[in-house]
Length: 293
Image 1: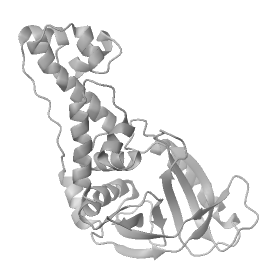
Image 2 (image 1 turned 45 degrees about the vertical axis):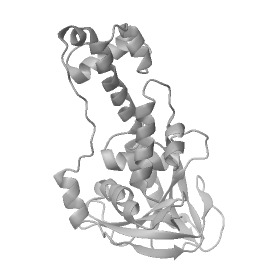
Image 3 (image 1 turned 90 degrees about the vertical axis):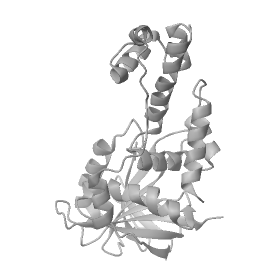
Image 4 (image 1 turned 60 degrees about the vertical axis):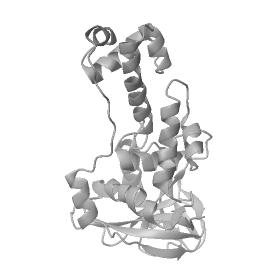
């Protein structure tokens, strides 16, 4: 699957429907990939959430209407997806430093451009701190035990990662030795879509692998990680830069590989080389794959 082509199909659909109500589900359907993965790839490419992009494009689409038509500002505002002229004017002025009426009177022709930007820090990261060629391996099914939460990723405007994930790990790490039949020395962050229709929520488990189920500690759950093929990448550096590695995987490697995401669970893998406060820390990140059709 050529993800660049798929994402472009979604963007083309947005562009031809700026004057209409469109859902993220509709856009992802046009692109031929799932809602979450479309948003993930889009954010990785543009550093912007899909919703903010749509709002920005609708705002830009209002410019020629203000300049070359006699449409009422309230009608332009409603077409652009705003509930009132006031909210439209606030957003317009924030971007263009003029309110819509001033813009119309002055005939000031601004042009809104959205493009992918790869900054120096990101380029340095993907050249120095990522294993650009992953290990492709078959992951057997595993019984996992741990704690879970629901969260919004940084692909969403409701992003609450900092509120959800660090406290989850802080509560889990001191209790890992309570889990019976634990195997291996690794801990896992397991990320998958929540089982809620039309939701941006993701499900996150802080977990370890076990050989069999036993008496589960209070507040924890068992779950099974299904067998799958995975591509496993190495992230070197501070853990807070992990998202740059994930962006590389989704926007660079996956798009030029012969694979596509299976929509299974992504894995963060924390082994004995993980150091939370070190530039030499190593975390591995793995995505489940199927061969492109």
